[in-house]
Length: 253
Length: 253
DNA sequence: CGGCAAGTTGAGCCAGGTCAACTCCGGTGG
DNA sequence: CCACCGGAGTTGACCTGGCTCAACTTGCCG
Image (tube, rainbow over the protein chains, first blue to last red):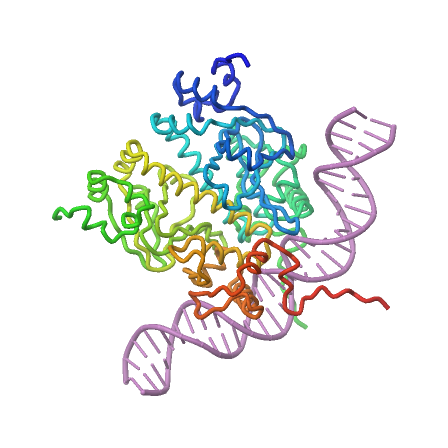
């Protein structure tokens, strides 16, 4: 393979192009070194990063797409424990022994397997890079904790509302616009939220019927009533009275 | 205040005494600096770390006890999104804006509010300390993801089995013994697993009746059949046939 | 314009939530 | 020492949200 200068290889990659992300913190020499020792990989839906591969390349940076961490139960039940997107760096160094979930692409995903050696060097010497990556890991941790809280006690409709906000918070631009992209399929969404695809579908319909959202397509939502959606996500029982579920007082005699 | 030498103040603290934990990685000068600029705090059940306090002391190191991150829903439903124990360091720097959960003690908890300034200095200069704290944060992240996966699709009995293993993995010694300490109350356990205290109680009884565990007290379990418990935790449907729930074939005519 | 996978709709049912009553246990004061 | 108290945990009976299964519709790709 001919020598490709880092700036060529990395030019189009979000991790370099977005000034808030990891590779944008590196100086020329660092980027050259990391670029040369790292390997990009393009995955399609269903592709998984196998354990033997991860043993040599335990550091995965996401350029684009959605990568999932899935847990499989004995009898075939599946759950998606976490979603990794643009800018996330997954660090699986020394975690082979515990039964971690598999990393599976939910669509077209471009990742970069970072060289652990160069990564460590950069971490030790470049405080900006260190800060960025630390905050990314911390976001992953808090996001997972929030998500635990969400799926533990919320009802289906509330979980879905929370998920819509999670998508909004994580999407690149338009944080305050009323358009939200749902970057995963209904099935994946169900697995992430610990519910059934049927229930997901019913909940979307419910929100639509109540005029809170509009769904021009499966991947795109328009929020029509953000405060109400927020109330639902926060578990406000006054707001989300379901179709035909008005708490009817049992009337005696 | 008189000058207290670090070794005095930190001597009894797990973070220093346990060679795998953060403060044990520091050299004399670093420990002195961190010790002098940090503040210990002893909490009792129900005490919470308030946001204004966290703004000045966003780094919490746990010496002993169990600290919970709780999310409160509008209508009073509560969930415990994460449990922090001995050796964990909670980093809440720059997260005040997002509606993070509250940090609430589930019993007697000894914490040390670390000086952010000194902490950053140490992070920048001491690679061992950096490695330890990085791995701690990563553990927190993966633990939260595992936990999400657990509560998303598992049934009550399976969640409880998983939790017993989580306790075993996190307790200090005796990893392979058959005694497991449950360091939280039943109510807290229920909130962490997203179920009702009643259900928790029923599941413990179920495991006891089937001879898988023995509960000498509320805080202590003896595992009698670890492989079976593991199968249940992994969602093996063949194993965990409940009392009187043998899949009876509906017989026609 | 088929053909298949993804998503939706409907009907029935069950795991676990809910509510209420009870037991257990540690602490307190007479 | 024991009666009392209050909070934690347990037990039982009932009820419902969402899971299940099956049939249907929609969307996507060649």
